[in-house]
Image (cartoon, rainbow, N blue to C red; front, side, top):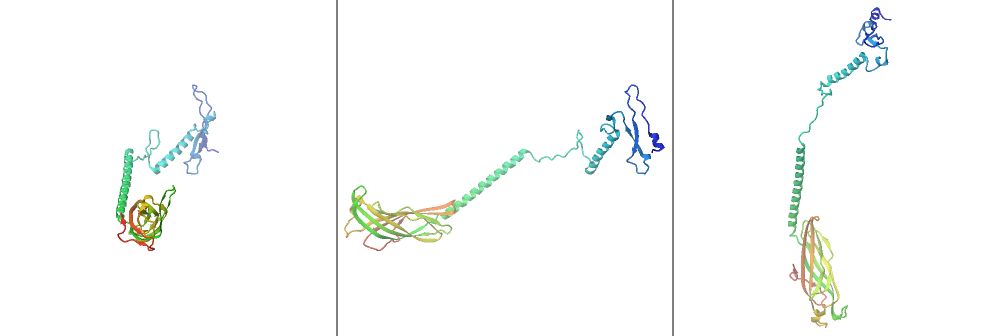
Length: 309
């Protein structure tokens, strides 16, 4: 039931003017106000229009109804007011959107390119400096290692067999032939204090009048630093034709002394800094000999009997 005051508030709209099209009357119904804090709901009733002519004029449509628009506007304005109250007021652009702070990059793009070029130059300079210093260091090490050469001492030559005879070569030519078998002993010393050496040689030859009558080969080996090593080389030559060079030799048993020359080359290689710094040396050795096949004693080399080049 409504009180007398609320019933008097209910009114009907008067008919529209003759110039406009007739519309159905709209009625207003009071609803409780949201601002009411006392218990009297009748004194705080608000009028809400009710349209009866079409669905478009009903309050359920979002585009009509003053109460719905006001409530929506109040909600949106409340949201913006609350957010602006928390974060402070923001400036808005022409379209009404809040403006944002834009972080600008410091420096121009040309400055970045200059910095990158400078860094590349610094890296190249650092690399070049490192290569230069390392090369200088290697050269210093190489120069300091050059004086350390392998020292070779000739010990003895033992001739086991020496035979002079006559025969024919593979083509049938008759000539004098020489057969020699022996063993050569020598000592090699590595004076280097920082590196070992790899020792090898070319063929060790016994030569008679520029004809090689016997030869042998020193096996390649590694010798540690500051060490001595005695090595031996077997020499062998069987029925070597002498042709015209053997005319001075006698086959008789009374005169069988044969002058020979021992020639060979010793090679040494020291790896100071891996394969980057290497020290190489070569020594050409030449020793004149006179072999008497009757004697069984080894031929000992004197200190100055061999020539080292």
